Image 1 (cartoon, rainbow, N blue to C red):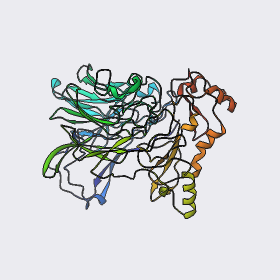
Image 2 (tube, one colour):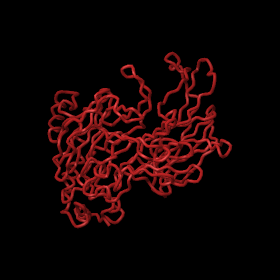
Image 3 (tube, one colour):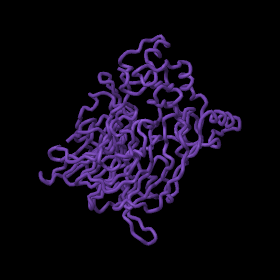
Image 4 (tube, rainbow, N blue to C red):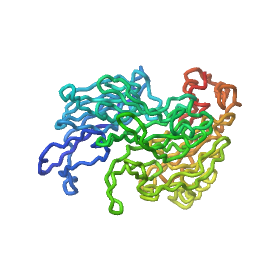
Length: 525
């Protein structure tokens, strides 16, 4: 059994006297308020007092791996709510805990036993970002706590982010395992439930059905069997106007779209819905026909700004690409122009990458973009030359350079990668991994590998352990139903029989740090 993760909730207090707040300041929503501004008017902690803070108390979930269920907790990453001097938070195993804000003493805990259903196949394992609170006017204004836990919303639906509560409606997205790639995988529909009864009140289809706006952007009837396109980050709400803002992600497969030709609305789109009915008010797609796992990774931020002397109630969507898209939150009109710029084409057979991608005129990108030989590891001239020689084996280019048959080097994503970290430079850690493009019929999956680079300019030759492992164990010729490889043939080459347990996963484990993916989850039976 694994040791519990070293993670704890820390509360700090200043060791010097500061003026007491006139009133207690609650934090009743995940983002501070329904618009996700994360703003607090408290002024006790300043640049002059921050250095004199000390730990008042700490609390840790102390959750461990459970061998009987095959589960292990992930990072402890919840943002607590504070209401009436009580902190409410969720743990990696989806427990809800209430703590005394003054002392850290545990007041109560609720365990939905999410671990009983085994380890989530979402890449992050058991993590949870927070819960939602609601005052029930029909029951004397009693406080109700809501948490998304696996396929259930407790008071039941899968997600790692808190729901949005509007009037008597609990509105939530869902979490779909990106690493499970199979035909008819579940879509990420947005749903609203009655807070009293749990009855479903409305649904918004993130992959439009026939007759709905955007259905024609899924060519060859790909809408009927493609999944994901889900909202795993928190959503935000303009409670006064009754508008909910939804940040949507990539459809399946994250890195190959040959089976879903078209722009693929509402994937990688910010969508504004009527919170009462779920009717779409406006939308803006930020990536067309996504091939890079560029999910919208954060809650849309509701802000009030002034542009050219005009006050605008705006919504800001930050992206993995390093852009901030700013829209009028009522009309959806971009505050600053958004230009459709030409981007590189795909060289993968059957793939039709979109010819242009949206780029905002303002504000400028807040992170580095694209990869070139100038980004090579440069601690010494010799190491830089070696890194550049290695980089030349793969496709590099500007932002939106597609995955390729020779491998594409891409800047990193929002979550930790699976391989060991490479060298450090300028205080940053660089990761690289090879992901196999599952789902290209009749092709050696090793030829679909995409090489990722995370954090900026770094390249470590030893991380090609993954590529070497694939080359040492060539895959068998495709067989009917295997979508590109023969698991039994691969097993024979190693001399180890592989049975149903591995075939259900859709992967074969070679050695630490390598994976060969065959056809995706659900094709081997």
